[in-house]
Image 1 (spheres, rainbow, N blue to C red):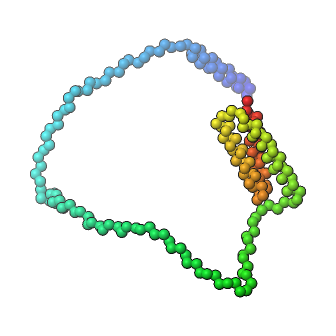
Image 2 (image 1 turned 180 degrees about the vertical axis):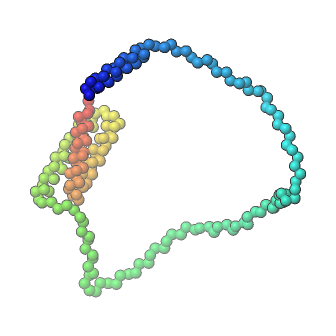
Image 3 (image 1 turned 120 degrees about the vertical axis):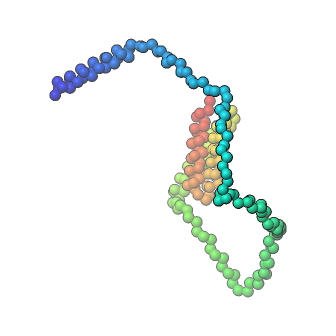
Length: 192
């Protein structure tokens, strides 16, 4: 078995050597002979006249119908823009009894945090916004490219959104402040 593999490997390497020797010999390139195309006549051949055929009565074309014009349609009525009339308000009768209860406001879904979690989130938010303010102040005096100006505008937008979301959704405010902080830090590191 091993002798067979050895014999095959010797045979394959000898084939390889022969191929390398053949590729080493460069043959000169000889272009193919130029192709000759048949000559095209300059004049158009004349066709014989068409034969005359006698018409038969079965294949005659009926006379053409007179051209009909569509009937005229009356003009569409003009539309006049009218303002809707103001609703007539009925005077409310004076309240004689207890005032009707207004429906209670719909409850809003929100994350409920412990006091400790709220303090921690507010601390993170304040620290992030402080860093953003410091970084933006140091970036503003520098000469920026168009892409860097876009990034600075995005930082300002995230900061503004974080400040607006502070009272309604503390977790969103923290997330926006972190984004602004990371963008400002990255921009400051890439400035010369």
